[in-house]
Image (cartoon, rainbow, N blue to C red):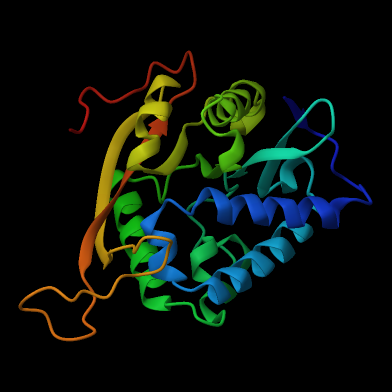
Length: 262
């Protein structure tokens, strides 16, 4: 695997952006939250188109130096150049106490994505609210930190350690190598339950958690309508979805929690 560091001015950015969006949706197929928010093939197709446009803007206009707000790195096959996965992150905000983030720095789930055809925006809004409350409880809404936003690998290439390698390289080459005001700042993320053990192996610690009720994912995707006894016709069967908030403290900071959440 190779990591792509030279995306600026690349004429193939539109192709890369489409592949990034495709991987994003494919990698999330096993996540019931995706199917609660985008329950139909048509809504997921609209999501993929939206993500491609978003990725295209990031690839075409990367900021540099102290202006950096978002980072992206691709994992590609060394032989044919096929993109296998990617990692994205937010750089530490320069003035964390000076009001809310700008429109383009809000969580992905807060923006125009809510207006996509077929989107069930109530599950996007609830996710954003709960994630923000958890971040506030830990104080990371006011602390300067890196925010790891997505680590996605094409399902065909999962199970080979690509997600771990992408994350480890981010920690080594971006976080640990940071200088000036960005040196030794922690990394914050919200993890699905399936990815918690991977992040723990990389040195992340559990900080908090949140959960929400979402429709049960039916086989093959989408949300399931329950026909069980005692439920009204067409009523959705609900499940509890949970994510864990985790933090990585760079080497040499002497920081870290004295207790771990269960």
